[in-house]
Amino acid sequence: MLNMHPTPTLSHLKPADYQHVYEPAEDTFLFLDALEADVNFIISRSPVVSLEIGCGTGIITTFLQTLLTSHGIPLLSLTTDINPQACKATAATALSNRTSVDAIRTDLAFPLFPRMENGIDILLFNPPYVVTESEEVGSTGIEAAWAGGKDGREVVDRVLRLIPRMLSKNGIFYLVTIRENKPQEIMEYMSTTYNLRSDVVLSRKAGTEGLSILKFYYPA
Amino acid sequence: MRLITHNMLQCHAKGCDPSQSYPLELKEVQLESLDAEYSEDFIRRLIPKLDWNVLVHTAFALGVAELPKELPDVQDEAFLRKVHQVALETRVKEAQMVCNGCGHVYPIKDGVPNMLLQDNEV
Ligand SMILES: C[S@@+](CC[C@H](N)C(=O)[O-])C[C@H]1O[C@@H](n2cnc3c(N)ncnc32)[C@H](O)[C@@H]1O
Ligand SMILES: [Zn+2]
Image 1 (cartoon, rainbow over the protein chains, first blue to last red):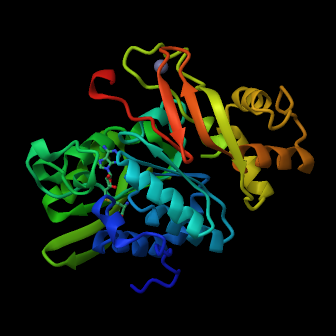
Image 2: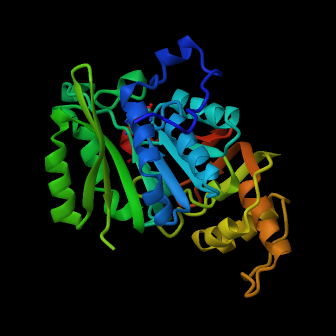
């Protein structure tokens, strides 16, 4: 699918910034396409608060925010990243695109809970999904952008277990996976453990990566 | 970071008393304001997500605005615009956020709060 909604500008970021912050790639752009393809579903759930874990440059949340604004829907956008440079980049990206996004430096989203328990209407996560040695997981630098440990699932699985605390009743959770992450198994787990329904919003093969954007939500 | 985000952050250090870990106290604060588009419907739907007492207290302590102690039953436009200004247009650029439970200090620099704890603190 072609992106009709304009991709946020990142002209404020220089090549050197991408030594520290994840440079948007096929996974990122598939995410943008998925959000645009799913915009009617998003609107039908009347979102107020969005949270992105691992925001990197902030391009995804900025895109969602401008996409919904173009449909007349304001959104309170929060983001987190464990990498301080990513938080800085996200704040700059929001500003360059004349939107408001707050970036919080933290592991996952712990300082928002339990205060925001079941208060997140749109949860976005493009995780470090590459299969690596477990020892590589847990950096706060650029390695944190990809190192996913066993099956590329070590960071993803920590987030999956938090979903029932974070997601609101009408919430939607969007997640990037590659084939090695066993997306089918994730969908089954979320269904049997938390009664969350799921769909594959979009899939695309990028080089050797079989990318999918999954979404999870409670049945009406 | 907007004041609404401060309204949602809490301490999550290991052993911190959960009855004291929220709200975080703002100290040595440098504020800035930034225009945000006003939407009445949005503000109305945001208010239930706020901890009202904390917003009132924070806005007063920082000298930003005086909000009614109790959420008014009838929320007119003047009231909603004030909430909009406090929660969405007031930003903390620099500050120290102090937890009254455990004393942990979370700094805010260039508008970004650093809530990351060391491995031995979680
Ligand atoms: C694949 S990158 C995605 C970046 C951006 N969202 C995008 O799609 O272009 C994964 C991001 O997650 C962040 N991250 C990794 N582990 C994290 C954790 N435990 N808590 C918060 N962020 C984390 C990384 O620093 C990185 O910015
Ligand atoms: Zn504390």
